[in-house]
Length: 110
Length: 113
Image 1: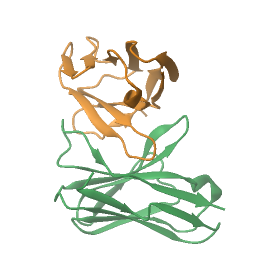
Image 2: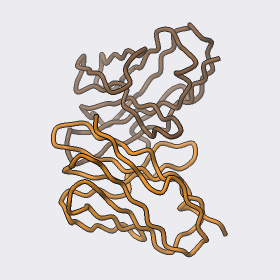
Image 3: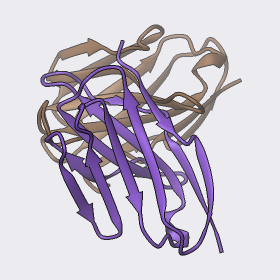
């Protein structure tokens, strides 16, 4: 079946630094989503992308839908302690269920 | 999320016993999903429902069954729990198969001993 890869698997950064992570697939998708999961909670939708090349921001978060439709990127600027969590990407091809990546675990050091 | 609740939040059960997890929504969404989350695997789809009494299997459905007799409730049953089913289970809802994404519940942590 379809599989998504996320990199890095985990990252430790200093508060105030910018963060970049990506999600890749061998299949093309028509929709990309980025979710964040806080400890002990369910994932919460951060950003949705619907068109190849699209760049969308949500506060300090910016995500891009890759031109090839096989990848997506998430950037977080000026990280703060509450950015800690697991970030999941999810891809969908029309009419099918979303496929989720394994997640990138972000730790922010004060 | 206030529109979707899972119960129980935590459960410890013995191998071989049946277990039922409940997902309740107040959003009147048509689609409901059960996922399991395990380290290194992310979220994997167990079963989903596209309407009352309409369900289908996901990628890891073996050992699980589901039922949906009302729009608001989606039950996940482990007929005979095994240690490999120790996991965190998430329910999700969606208004349609499309670009809206899913809203997730807070999860049920199940431990099979």
